[in-house]
Image (cartoon, rainbow, N blue to C red; front, side, top):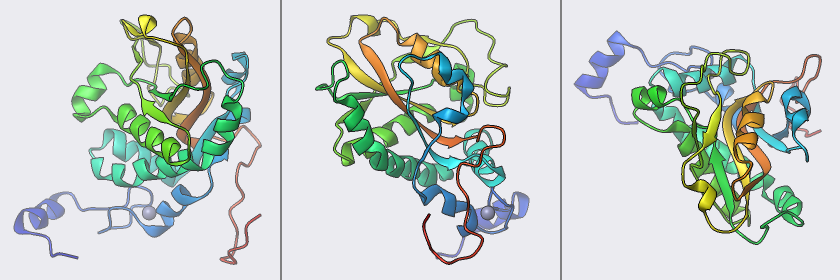
Length: 253
Ligand SMILES: [Zn+2]
């Protein structure tokens, strides 16, 4: 690795680089905290009670289970200026999308507009957050997911069809931590041509309230929700989504 320049050295004296998952110093992220991002995606809709209101039910794929290190990486990427973590989270979501593509393609079989490319619709961030971050992170996730679906044989493109609901209080997101809130259809979307299936994208699903609201906001648009992809999901109380092997045997359950 190239030696850090004088500016980087001074910056590290002020703010040392550390893995946001476990605090290990002098690495952007560590192997242990990276590992869960490359496991097979999880189906997680049963752990999200607020998705019950959707009919038909929405299959949701999650890259990782929401534990401390996973939460740490996402939070650092979103709100601590660790934009470099996008180089891990984006490709991890793309890989999960690619893995989910066959099942999604099967589900599309009888869906409305199944012959059209899938619209990958991000749950929008608050405008103030997007300004502060200097990037539309949900849209970056949607583009990664669309690339992954396309690589898996399901033509898809990111479509920023939702905008934050104007004047809405955003404090009460999933568990009050993830400030995703009400969304509404972007003006002009309703008149777009032809029905097409839509896959929603968000960073974290806990209760599923945000995804349910986003799916509701698409009602009346040409986009029909057929699934969702998220970076991380919280297991339902008492449920274990993925049992991590206690030893490094490498055996897959
Ligand atoms: Zn770590």
